[in-house]
Length: 414
Image (cartoon, rainbow, N blue to C red):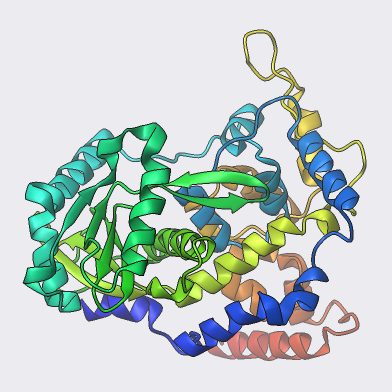
């Protein structure tokens, strides 16, 4: 399972003390810096919310779940997604109306397999999970307890979760080790998102751990890197929500560990195996993106006042807005397409088609796009490489590198 650990344990990940200093800067000691990124007045904040409501149009805002919030961190530089998510626009309905539906969702077989595996892990009061936690976290057998928050009813789950977590954080002794079906909240651009992690584990050492149960297989200690990355981003959402809850209750938010417990089936069997995944990098990206969504007034300032993504549903609830008009409205915002969007964003096919029409270097992936610097299109890059295009100001270095690469390519072909 060492391959899973390396997903989060990379150079440049902030230390625990750096996390604490960052959070301190964002509170009392960093008020001036934080205030500088917020609307200057309450009226400006209300105006920004009014603009977001106008962007969404007549439909109610779409609630965010953990997968949607995690996807925000997958492409933090996309202004189009930030605006649409901030406004609560239904991107799936928008994509389908444009004729670019995204093939998201699991097959019934995969959903059934995932439910069976989760039931196995949680069977008999999470007995199998406790076995893995004892080995992974050094949890004492005598201190095990189990709380199923779902037993109180859906309308009381969040309040009951708050009470249990508060009691656990205050009690130095046994306040409960496992919390099944907890309900957490997170503010997304002024809207409350309700989140349900698989399990929250409380260790007597004073740390909470998020437990994420996934059905993708770990073969010979290695798992699909993209699946692990997606699980890490989703778990980071739960870590941030639980830290926010502890902070609201007056506790140290860093009692929630940045190491999440990822549980997967081993070698295509249903035998579960657990490992720790460090999500500090995903947390940092997620915080920046959520902060960006609370300061959308700067993005809104560059948009036409009459711009809206309203689908204008008819009496039957079906979108009635002309497709060309909606597509034109979307193209007035800046997208940052990458091939990774195909697995995280409902508008991926529309943005890919747009990038193809423009011949954008985005199609080649983030790494190539970033290395090309200010070269926006493939045609421009080829022109600089062939020497038929003069570099613009600031493109001299990348033009030299492209011409060297083209010279080496020709030498290899001759």
